[in-house]
Length: 321
Image (cartoon, one colour):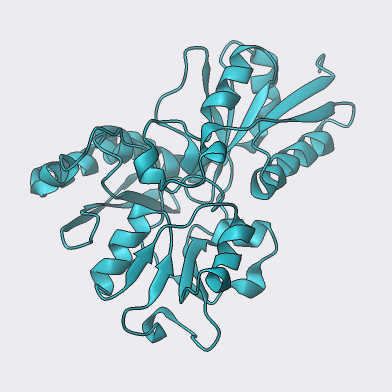
């Protein structure tokens, strides 16, 4: 190993720093002579906190500035939450590794006295900025009132009291990583609320031509998680349409088989098309494309076309893990 210093680019939030420091620790454990440093970078998504994600528009809200730093050779690795990563990369960079997935489920932080989603009172106030979460929960409970909340995990948890909410929806992965397990009131089964594309996994982005760094980080790749996330991202890439539309996909692996479920929904959850399929791990990407096309054949197109000049991205981005 010739390289002695490796620079990691990361957002500066508590969750992003936890993720980057985990990568740093694993690298230092594997390469004791290696010096690993963190470069904190503020992204557009970090700067715009008073507008719902679906209304901000554009792609790469939480990664673009980090990618630009990599192209300027200011960093060697970018550590991303996979659900923040667009389905395209700037010329010269690419997704090198997908780490083993943390718990992919969504969770509820519940108001005192309420023990489950079923116990939320009629007309209950739910905090989330994710169209995907809003649509799926409204499809089950049209009576609920969905309120947009932004900010890091700690801020969202505090909004339960500050904004007089009945529940806040977050990702289990972020709660676990930051040690907030005691705040979790209920885990939402993926059959109830399909997770975001890539939820719970981390992605390591590198320069394509940096062979030395690429070889050093390859041990992070988790084949089963990678297959599932590649299939999920193939669904998103095929359905590229409008960020006003909730899209979800979730893959699970057992042995050499992948089970993939995907959905497209109207924002209010009244129109929802959901399909599942299975395949060999080696067919993950092609199966994601096929499943997306099946959704289109069954009527997802008109839902996707209900857009207002805004490109598709995974609207669960930010600090939800």
